[in-house]
Structure formats: structure tokens, C-alpha cells
Amino acid sequence: MKPPSRQLQSVQEAFGRQGWQAEQVEGREVLQTAFEAHHTQVHLLAQVFTELNALSVIAETPLGFAKTHQPAALELLMRANKQLTLGGFEYDFERGQLVFRLTNIFERELFDADIISSLVHCAIAELDRMVPLCGVLNRTSPELLADLSIPLLLEREDLLPPVPELEEEEL
Image (cartoon, rainbow, N blue to C red; front, side, top):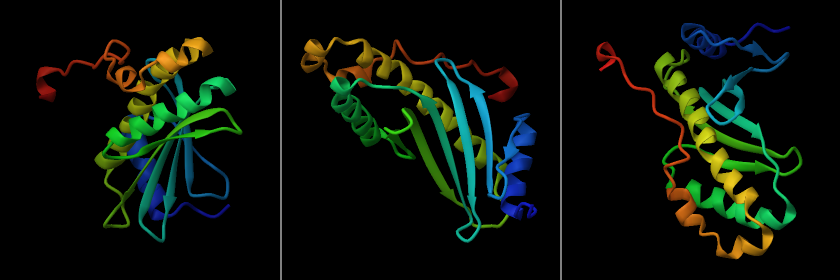
């Protein structure tokens, strides 16, 4: 197996500093791992594009939608994307996976560990934020879907995961 690039090594080191266990996908510049978020289990891939000095972080979780609910689910994801500054939601119909993907292009061959950690945290948090909203949509009976306000659903804060409080030395 070809040794990992310097870029992938910097991602591995950043993961190690955070105490995150990950394994390299054989023959690819990709690390894979899993995280237990507040609302769901997140499968995470970190893929390096050496020619671009770029890192894509892809977080996904299994989530199915009935055919009757798919148009509303896609509207929910599109409206959520409209509110985002970084990254975006996707839905993989074939695998029944809710996906959040974001990419950063680095100036140097060695990627900044703080940026890598931020990308991972962002991907997990965004995916975890969307899962309960999708759950509300999934539990809505087909005859009431037309009455479900997707913009109001996106405003619900009662379903957000709790924000951990910072210790004084972290401030």
C-alpha cells in the first residue's frame, strides 16, 4: 500500500490530537471514522485531494423517507442549504443517507489542525441538527404534509442539541 501523502498525514495527526480514532481507506487518501452525536450516529470521511491541497469532510447518517415525504424532505434540505455559509446537505437516495459535506482549500501542504477539527465539528453538528427536523417531517402523516411549514420547522430551536458550556480557562 502506498504511504499516505503529507496532507493526509497532517489530517491523521490532527485527529490524533483530538483523540479521534480513524483508519485509512485502503488505496485512497481517505480516513474514515464514526462519532456518536446527540441525535444520531455519524459516519465520517475525511478525503484529501493532494493536487488541490484540499480536504473534504463528509458526514452521513442513515435516514429514509417515504416517497410521499421525499419532496418535503428535499425542500427542507434545500432551505437549510440556503441558510448555510459553509458546506451543504445532500440526500443519497440509493443508500438512504442524509449527507453533509464541506471542503476547505489549504495554502500549505501541511493542513492546519484547528481548521481540520473545526471542519469535523461543523459537519457533525450540522448533520445532528438536521436529523430531528427530518424526524418531525417523517412523522407527519401524508395528508398533513401540505400544512407543514418547512420554514417554521427550520426555526425550531427546541430540537437543537445542547451546547456544551465552556470552562473558564477555555474562554
